[in-house]
Image 1 (cartoon, helix red, strand yellow):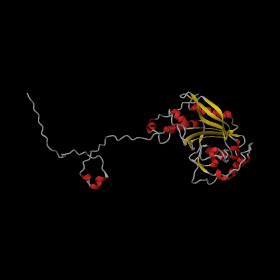
Image 2: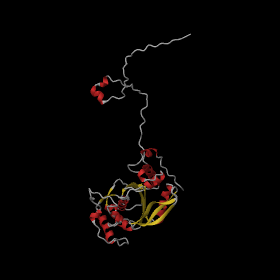
Image 3: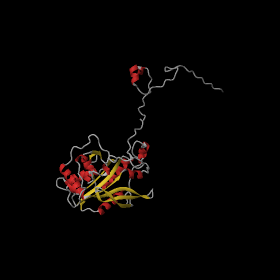
Image 4: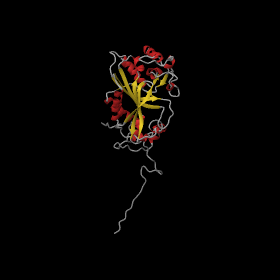
Length: 334
């Protein structure tokens, strides 16, 4: 038995000598020319899912910053308002008892602002006390013995450290209604320095700073506070080396043991603010201020195993790394 099948093919209503791809979108050109009237369109599928919408991703620096903020707030610190990047030389240098002839105040180390080149005003009574401290001393100091220049103090610049904000907070603390009250402050924000860029240095970076103002604090309180902070981020092996800073005495560099590099690495700086800095503010004589600071980039590079800082911050950043960077978590050690 043989079965035969046959088919009859005829031209349908949509026959065309060439295959015409159906349009998916209505364009301006179709509306202008009237082609939309004869153009075949794809049927709209109301049940299909749209293209996945990609959300934003936190940069590794922001992840570490959020973790540091949480740790410092757990330690009882309040965050300082650091959203003002332009400061006067008065707040950035002079109030910290840093002489106007200091090399850090040269143009090859600091970015000065051309317009406006000078600040409008500073507290005049405080200015006079700072000027006197520089010129002739006080609080047991003989000062720097030079002519303090107003035009130098009023120069605007991109802040070289967030300590410029710390000095303003301490001045407000000393002159607030009701008098001085002990406080703990911290800040994490950008600072700017005219440095040669390489694998570990940029002209713009983030500074983490903490300070405690209270009665009769000692160097032991400073070391204990620093150890508590670093223990909370998993750094338990610390060393302290004597150092020099214009506005702290005594001063110490902080070294931590790097388990990957198998060596001690400098991770911060610290000290007690000098009496020459605190006395003009009007703080009581037995008030001491301990402070420490470190960059945000270095612990971030260690955390995410990044060797070149330009791969972390700047125009060379790999966006895929930002999307795939894991959540930052520091496990505290007892």
